[in-house]
Image (tube, rainbow, N blue to C red; front, side):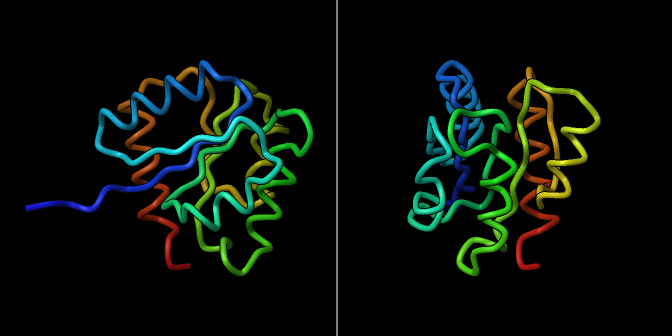
Amino acid sequence: MSSIKRKVLVIDDDLVVLETVKVSLAHLGFEVDTLQKADGAVEKVREFLPDLVLLDLYMPGLGGWDLCRKLKADPATKAIPIMILSGSSEPVDRMSGMEAGAVDYVTKPIDGEALAAKIEAGIGGSRGG
């Protein structure tokens, strides 16, 4: 019996974070793709069609807030849940991320199993709405 893997796109400018999250989530059964910059991410999301986007806020060029708003404004990507994964625990960043359309805000570092549980909750709680 084969099960369908949940697809997650991780967007972060920190290569160590990308690789760590990718390995952790792949080990837990997710299909994971990564991007190291927000520029071109809308096209990547449209192509990969992830079940959830895991997004850093602070990146060079297009920032996480702007990308989140773009994805939520695009009819092809607006139903895809976005979860912020940021090193910032500032309340204003958390609030801004949620106002931009994110379903959850998680601060780094987080262990793989806890992140996977949050991702499953984010996918289950928002897809189809």
